[in-house]
Length: 315
Image (cartoon, helix red, strand yellow):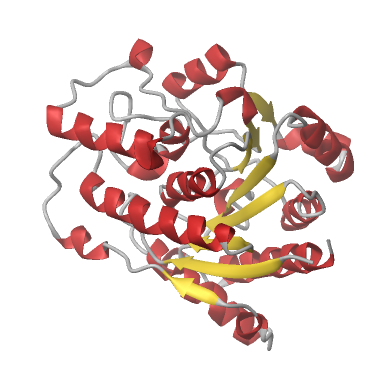
């Protein structure tokens, strides 16, 4: 039976649309609406945000608010590392997906000798770098920091020395780089990404499970095939961006995309993963209640969270 610890990260400085910092509280409100005492059961830690930077001028156009992101990486990675060293299973509830790079760093800092696999359930690849980004938003870059990739083959920007220094810090946090090998990343429901990211996926032969493949094979077969594919990994981190869900239900997120997962498909698949002893950390991200009606996205996220944690508790 795993000792669960909730780590709340109400940070949205990596996103392009405002409101994701409210996602953690929206999930808590969903729990109250369901008359669940879920958030009373587990110890929790709230990471202070750097959201004040949203009101200040942007210094680095190709890595927006990167200095704040560095501070978040430092705080989150330490919290995740300390939790794991104290024998907790960290469940991260975060605002925007840039925070996931810090979660991965924390796992590696706690277990530097482990071979880490990543299951990235997301409509987007989040493999951009300051050299390739179309937006400068850092929620599109966390996996690139984790695999220590600049992607210079597809560079479209000249990056100033200060931004380069900050970017290099993010890649090397914990003095471990790369933290994950590209071939140990599995994308699920990936369907909206740029040619620069496609170039990296093809260069490294990164595994992609489409929505239609999941639907055709079913959660059980996909779960088994991914665990088999990552069999060399000693630990596996699961990151669930709610925009992996179909845009018909994922209205409460900054970047909804059609042809995504149904709620039950995501719930079934994630709860399957939680049966594996190798899963060491789970993250839910990008709930934005300001874009939603009746807190639907947060309610779906809470259902997935509650079922996943219940499965964790049983294993």
